[in-house]
Image (cartoon, rainbow, N blue to C red; front, side, top):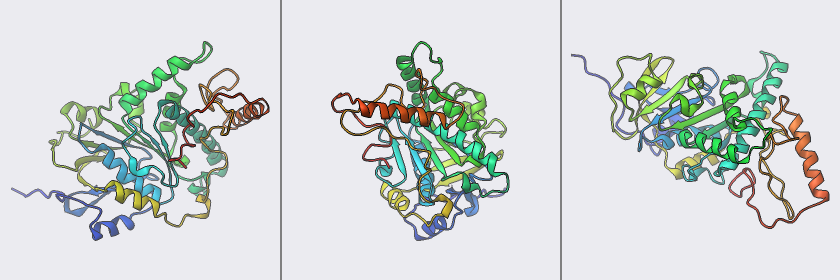
Length: 353
């Protein structure tokens, strides 16, 4: 009987050899972990799968996997949007340059709408540039970390029910924007790293949404969860409670993987050590900001930029809301209204950049 080769028992970032391996990984292919015989398990966001789905039961290390991937992407020059309804999933990312941390559901709602608009802008730009253009010409790589999608999607729907007007669509524009991002090609360089305790079709907005995740990481899964997320692979490998042990499904093949473990301090330090960016990646995209007006006399709108409220509709052209929001802000400056202290929106928080 042939002896099975298993992954390492542990894979710690503090090991100098492991750190050197992470350093040598290609920019679009962050290391997830090591498989049998030390095989590198990574996801190439440019060539294989633009989005990653992480599904695990309680204590399965979902946030650890996202932390490991996101820290590598940020170090390589990506900008990250942490949409964390739990508020405490990624404390390492707070205050890191290039990271926008959204905690409240209103912030997450506005950020998704802005990201959807940015995706449209990049789609138009990629079309104009042509197939032979440098992929980085559309803008800096954007990583969207969406924590606990089961609870977040419910809260987004409830938030929209409470804030929408009679003429607004029934479906949340933030949920629509997320669906649109998932269907965008890898050319726009928008990548969703999604965490779900139960990645059902209902939680993700339909079975077609789930098909956009060609890379799926499963840990502490049930047989039902495996049949739902990796039905093409039979029989299902046995789940384990071994810390850091997952099954990474890539291209219809399951790879037993020991996930790379970074502590919060290690992830923060690694993300802060930015590599030299290419000229096309330097700076922020001038047309893309998730910000709110600041200063005395300003109050926060109920819907935020890009919402479907009355004259500020969620448009088909990404340039339209920029002009509409700008006119709105100029008018408010002429006749400011004192409303007292209000909490700044996503992107203006002291922990955001």
